[in-house]
Image 1 (cartoon, rainbow, N blue to C red):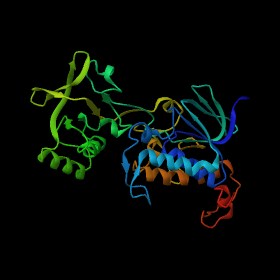
Image 2: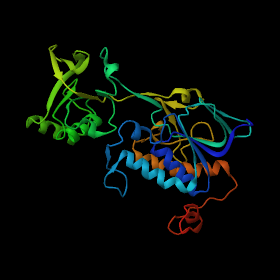
Image 3: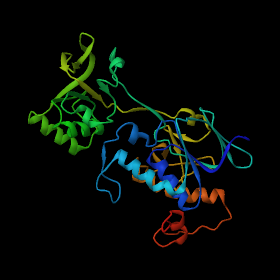
Image 4: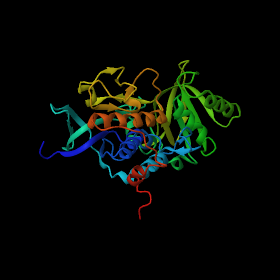
Length: 344
């Protein structure tokens, strides 16, 4: 691959775990190139819920999802990672010399010493409302993510879903909209119990409505969007007038090309060890939601831990004769130099 970009590590996926992987590799003196099929860094945080608050990042009592991505980008600046967005990785193959050829749909080629897959749930698309003609109103009246909460303020809003995203936005927007109706196909919810309890309090107080049912059809005012018709569990139809609709039915996770790279899978996730988070192919590592192991928890902070151990595993793979020892950013002159601390 004469035109290939040579690098120590290629990281596939630029969500929080992929970004933090750059940092952990950088601390150990290794350079990386970061690739993502999306047009910008951040993964699900940026694509699906940029304004959603996150409460379980250490030392940050509350942090917006996009804010977390912005902070990570600032944190990795000293390491000068190559970043390539809008490039889906279509092929990863191991050579006889132990290095990897990595190719993207956009024509980029890499000659990498190791590969980290930090692809979240893989290539994902939100599950959509199964209503004929709804596509024409996507982005204007119907949304599957919140890019700007202010776009819903003062509007008549209907939210579909029973998970954390639906309940979180129901609670967040309840006092900021003209009216709000939550629709879910059953009385049980998958969201956090505290969120469900708070939602039920708002319903009891008459501040929001809850309708048990599913979307059945569009309501129009001429050619304009006017709301949705909902079919209740008893078969009755109810018209819900609305200016905006939010639907949170989760994602269609698709491993896409990853499923063809010869890696051991378990329930559409990549099996890894818990020492260095290496997959079944030596030199290919996986961190974040894309991997699985006994006791796996799909949390961002767990992915950060995985990235730290993966960095040491990658160093051992690339430089097997190099002695490894733990250094601390607070006291190590080498690490502080890599971080640019004390430089003008």
